[in-house]
Image 1 (cartoon, rainbow, N blue to C red):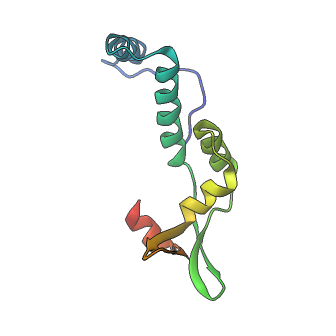
Image 2 (cartoon, rainbow, N blue to C red):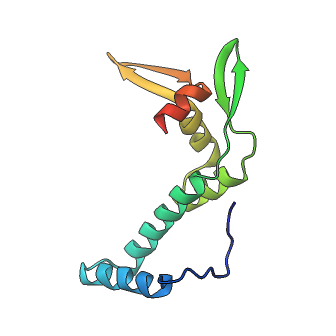
Length: 116
């Protein structure tokens, strides 16, 4: 389940105060506001990556992995500042550089889940 906005109460926790403490600690470490913003965008992207659903598929007679719904991928791409298609490529294919050559292969769902 994804939560969009609002607030959730958890007894004994004060997310607002903890966030303020983290932000203060980053300021003590001389993080600029822009650097703090970039860290928060990266954390948000990682959380949204957990919402991406993968589907097993057969492409060119090989087991492969597809991402049938791209809305979460688009959100992650926007947060990371990268185009959606290269991100999908990076999440569903394996690239190996060896001896000056590049080999790209599709990840099957089982391999993908093991690497995650």
